[in-house]
Length: 410
Image (cartoon, rainbow, N blue to C red; front, side, top):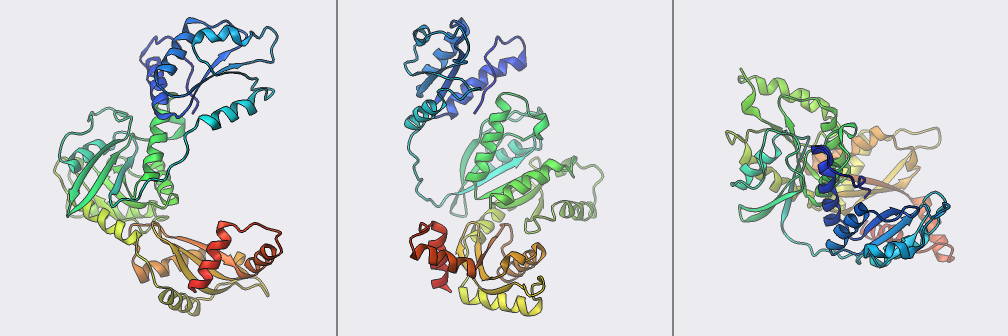
């Protein structure tokens, strides 16, 4: 993570630079303090080094521009108090390998978290669409700072609640602006944390202000959630603020939203109000239902019956003498449900036919609220890979093992 340069805070915006440095230190595993090796350490350098060391994280001092004439010796920078000092030149890649080796030694080993039965629900959306208000309503108490100012939430607020005997952890994230609107500094870290919350969540509630619908960024966020394979609920917030609404207002708005999000037709749409509490409890019911559907396992026999019926009703098109042949299908994973189809000439399967197969699976097994993933494995290519492995010409990869297990299942 690259931070903005340290400078005296002359106004409110520059004051966020100080917050950014503290924020980066809290998020980082290793801190790299960079100075100009042609300039003697200044008070600002000493202040920055002190802040970095105070974090308790491993710190490396990078004396950059080491290729320039007048570059000072490492001894001049020891007074900053950082023991690990490396001279580099970003322009000529001097010292970069040594720096990478030092970073690799200091990064803590990756650890796998033990699975638990907690359902994690993230509130995602643009700034000031009512995420914190909904978060507080769902939590039943004041957990987040709520103000009518965009960007109040910077970190990810968390709270656990019990609903029908199930623990649900709510994650309230900072709002994401479109990239051109993202300010240099702390807001970049808010975006990183929001992306982290999406990856951590089981179900994402995408909030949209009823007074600001049809915003392209909302569709982009839905695409990110879909690509991450997370459950998705489209939540229209501030329904109480709509003036002059009647029984037909909902039916007028819903088709418009469905059209804008036609690439995620599986996502349920719900209209809520944190002020009146309308449909707030239903969000818990939706989260529980989607969580269950994300983990359902389909029997291989039933899957293949559905596949053969789909092919009989609508055979896949192809080129002359190169028609795709779909032989069998297996489910290889859950959360999200993942299906692998085996056959030949699969590179000619059109994207519209893939969508047709996905729609067929959804109608048969009801995967409402969750994306499903599909992969295609060409048997000729798999056979060639097997021969290469047998002759010792290729390593036994994870994908190869998965293919062998899928064959056994079929």
